[in-house]
Length: 282
Image (cartoon, rainbow, N blue to C red; front, side, top):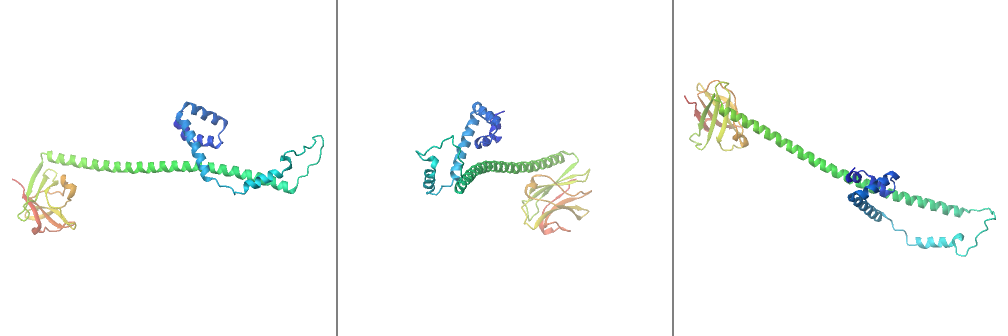
């Protein structure tokens, strides 16, 4: 086993608290000789424990020392020069009620002190374990957020790559007819292109140059079929203009045009807002 096993197993806490078994003590002390990191961790834990106990201690009242020495001096068996009873004489020992109370008080005080020290040790151990758990939990949450962010970006890049591949396939298809739509007289800088697959009748649109519309407006593509406008759908701006956007299908058309309509599209085109238009060659 390596040093990290002993550091994270909890045996060090038991060792410092005096609650480790003889086998665990022997195993840890052997590991301290073998791994300097384990010895350093034991010493650091010992110092931290001493500091924790020091911080938690309660200073006794100032007159306790005086009362304690007075009680010791009043004990006959503890006084210097006190006569030693003959061991051969079997005299009945009379225990006064006061001595019984003093003895009980001493046992209670000793037990309370032991429980207090044990409580401090356990509190310290559990407090450190809680801090470690919280640190691991925070790291886990951070890693989970990072993983979700990476997964989201990965899905976005995958979708964008698929769209780029689809656009490339459309451009390379010999059945696709390219229809250029220059700007109209009110909007000479505008430009868009239609790619019409006459075999499967699918229409794709590429925005070359169109101004960004207002929030309540949207561009709409039209196909002029036998002199009548046919809705080919609305399309997006923003990042989508860098890719071909799939529109509706049409079996025949003489020209295509783009108008600016209310968001969601219109039933009939607003001719005053026609930005681009182009006839089908041939």
